[in-house]
Length: 199
Image (cartoon, rainbow, N blue to C red; front, side, top):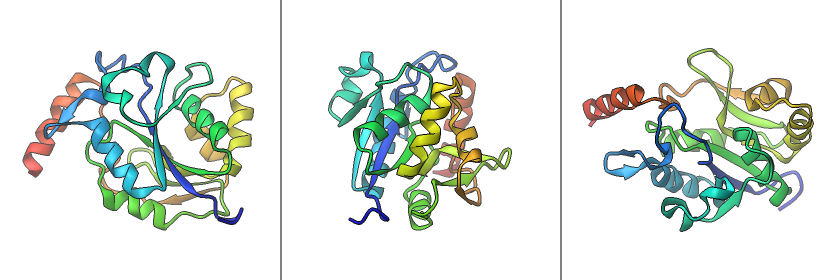
């Protein structure tokens, strides 16, 4: 591929501590399947090759051990550690970065993101339906985004959303409720009820 069209790899973020949920969010099952595995299947279809982002102490976890991994090589500072680690390992690639806790996400939403990808920008992302800001955890980060992410990391700024705001980011309209995530036991109960009513 030419330098103007970097290959698109997938990075499934699963390294969070899940403190508010009080259990591993990646292992939570919706409709009988751990959400990490469901998100993994979606990401595999949408990208040329995909990896799960993990912390070092998660490598042997049974849910993650069977999947290709990229281990965080930066201090655990949230999603930016996973993104930077992936960019370091395959600097020529663009990364479709995906959080593992998006139970309503479907293949059509990822296809919309990939189809709208602008390789001339630093990133392509959806707008949040909640605050109108970029959604960094279902977004395509081009190789050119690495310099700003690293600069911000070195300065102690770990928010990937703010990096998107400061970058040349193509923003797409919010895809309905597809990017609603689940962070607490109460939100999980509410999400399960929503999904049952949709079935």
